[in-house]
Image (cartoon, rainbow, N blue to C red; front, side):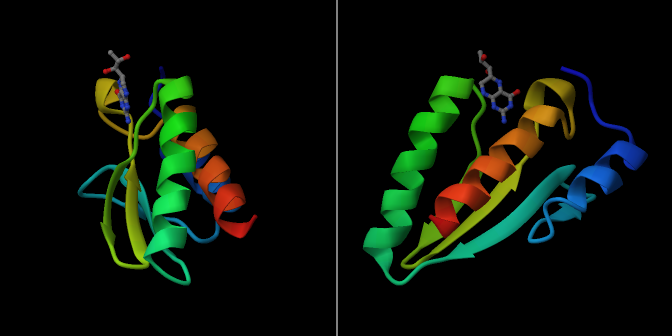
Length: 96
Ligand SMILES: C[C@H](O)[C@H](O)[C@H]1CNC2=NC(N)=NC(=O)C2=N1
């Protein structure tokens, strides 16, 4: 899996406006907020299944109705198209 160039990353983030690039973590990050814990955990459950299927897993944490996510490709040491794909899946699942 090829790490994205800075140009590719900037172009991709235009389609993922809720995400920002964290230089230090070499990851895209976003916070999701839900009505309550049940909604937040239901989201995490759906994404866990999709992540396992794609063999690409988020770094994330949950506090009540909030889920903080960082997406990076450990094997590539930075951002790849797999992170962009998972970000789009997460955006869609959160707004469904
Ligand atoms: C063995 C397995 O395919 C790898 O460890 C996968 C699993 N999930 C992964 N997830 C992420 N985010 N980055 C990886 O490099 C990665 N590698």
